[in-house]
Image 1 (cartoon, helix red, strand yellow):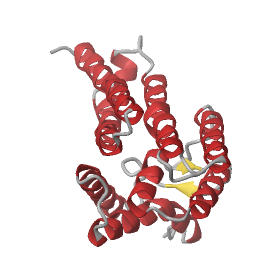
Image 2 (cartoon, rainbow, N blue to C red):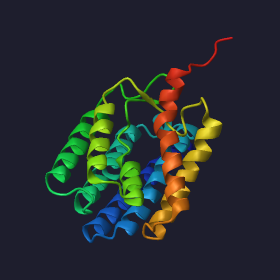
Image 3 (tube, helix red, strand yellow):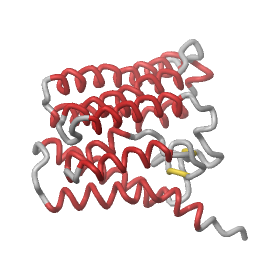
Image 4 (cartoon, rainbow, N blue to C red):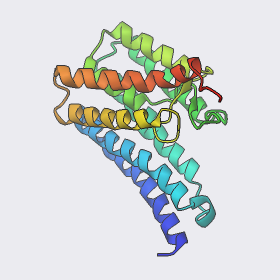
Length: 231
């Protein structure tokens, strides 16, 4: 296979995320939340793999006719923002006006964030909360907190998108990657397990999803508080 063909194959692999987004949306319309999240987890895995593949096979050089960054952002907005926001609104976790506030804040704020050219830092982390609402909403489905807590969390994270706070990219942020990658993989495992069992009240699943989510949420901020030693 030529280098050009391999590079195009990576783009095609990325594009499968759009198919998984549609399958997740169809499940969400029917209120089949566990199936929806399983498809979103699959899309999340694709999103974690396609970046390293794109760099490995130099897609910008050998398949420049396709904009991989734009393709990735389109799919990410569907799987990270749009579908999770719909699920949060329709799930009943947020009654009345609180649901409307949440979907407006999530979709509007994330659209602006995804278009922000400053969203990546020099160490390939994210500047501001990176709009990973798929992860947030899954945690909410697992833990089912009071609706005031949910509303407060949504507003805080939406504001957090436009702050100088750092959030790790599990694959590309090199610092602490030996810890971050396994924890991100554990999050995927717990998330898939929770969705597969239709969000049972399982203490192990709740603890696993909560602990791994807290690490991924605060690791970047911890890096800012404790900068690396320059020797």
